[in-house]
Image (cartoon, rainbow, N blue to C red; front, side):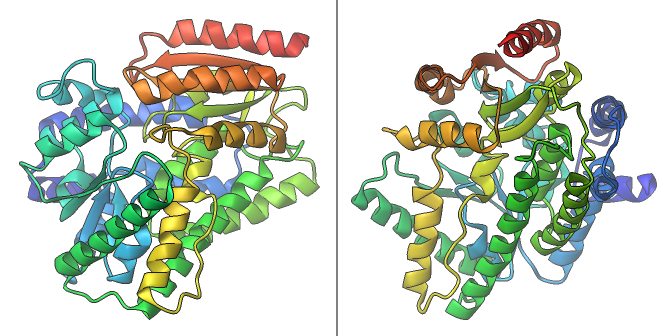
Length: 427
């Protein structure tokens, strides 16, 4: 398998020597975070297999699909409607951006005080050390922050880009503008794939993605129970893989895992003691392989039961209407789901996100909230003021943290998180 992967990576024009350095480190990091856990559900085998060959298994499938005439769209954000691509017989894949390994290469073209997610994304492409960045026929960006907007200009010099201009308010005229962006995206997808989007194909694509959302929602529902049948680390890995995997296969394996988890709940089989503090993580997304915070929290004796971020509830909350009669009606339904129901910190005003956090804290019976901010992300850092203020008003303990992808602050984070958990236990 290793030789076959090297042949594939070489054909993609990757820097094999540098990429081998990443491949040498990842298994140890993965083992330290995931394989040290007790009572791992059997249904995690699939996800561990995918993660163990994350730059091999899915990339090989994408290349075979391209040989059959399909086009691959690389995306960075939950605002891009996958349904449009699938309706034109295209494939959507997330793009890497969660490792310190890629940051130095990104800093050769970006200011150091850019958030690590953006630097890692550019570094993965420029350094030729991520197969997903090499495979995608076109990247689809969105204007969620100034750093990403300018980074896309740099990427656009090297690979075809389509940028969706996201309004930063949710007024009626903003909704209409976003609907126009979805229509323009559909036209670009038709151009790239050579396939026409029909209402029948779009409704079917909506059902496929809704199926994935329902499976992930079912997974999260299992974490609301007093008996917690799966760790936050494992759920985070599932969510990260959901951005890359075939959506129908993902739905199937998640539903099979949920069958097991629901049986565990009935039999009171928990991965933690009943008195373990229940923590919700909110804030910036956690792209693969960023597992640091979950690992520290859970190895400190707590359990992460919910994530209010783009690699959490925002990814699957709310379905899209499936019985649309016209394309215009379907685009309006997509607009509603992808604009109204995603409360990203890029919006102003943004009371819906704070309301979501407090509602989720109650639904998941959390004992405390950790509000995470990646360094130099001014959007979430500033909005943390409102998040922490309103949580304190609601009587919910909250800890604000800022970090990056390095392990330099791991012990400091462990100390602060440990003190926060001790405070919760003493309440």
